[in-house]
Amino acid sequence: MDKSTICIRRASYGDLEALEAARTASIQAEEGWPQRFSFELAEHMETEGTFTYLIEDECPFGFVTVGRCELDLAEGEIFEWFLRKEYQQSTYGRRLLIHGLSVLKRRQCESALIWLPAPARRAKELLQRQAFEDSGAIRERNAAQVTTLETGLVRDLSDFF
Image (cartoon, rainbow, N blue to C red; front, top):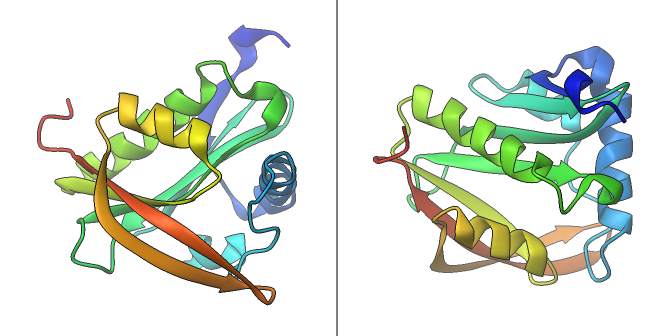
């Protein structure tokens, strides 16, 4: 992998198959994660005010999807943030996260929310290093007849760039 060819760009409909593969590979690498989601990636692309950005070399290996939060916990939300396992423990996950937060800040969001399933220990540690704090909110996500508990983490964006 030539690091000089890695870039972050806005995802398009033509990227959906590669993004789905990256999401599936990321999920399958984590024990205890829900293996299916109740929504399709195309739904995000069709939603006004929701943005998906991917990171790629020859093909996408991760992505972040952000938009307006529908709950009172925050103004913006990170709906999805996935990185293939072989690219984890590099700076790529953090770079994607910061890009997503930058998009929310440019959209005038003063705070950002992300929901994490309990097994996401590495992701939670990275988020806490990026000033995310436990919101105290917990939700159940039901998909493919499996219920997963998720914890909400929030970051104040008022001091973000």
